[in-house]
Image 1 (cartoon, rainbow, N blue to C red):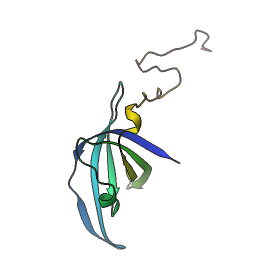
Image 2: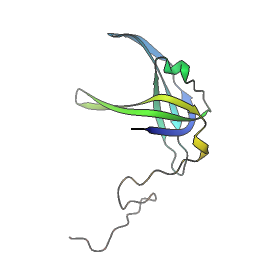
Image 3: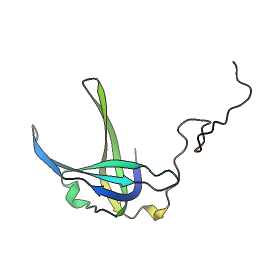
Image 4: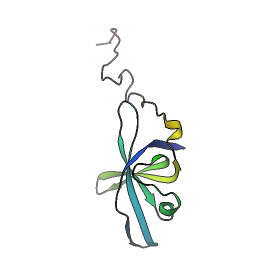
Length: 119
């Protein structure tokens, strides 16, 4: 699966590090704001050497190639958005609006319903 998201880096969070059962680890999160009619803020994580190989700075326009993964812990689910590659520039600067989240629902929140409902 080839997922990518483009936008402007609005905030760099502090790097975190520690020691795990597989050795030392480090990660850094940054906030990416998408473009379009309804901008979204997404927290993206870089791990290990990827932090140094794909440097990002506040104000950068980037395209992040990402993996999305969820995991369960004590009945709660947590989702990570991990960047494995960063390209400077936001893919030509144009990001289209995302499709509506449900069929028949427009971006304005109005439903486009047929009159021939079965009930």
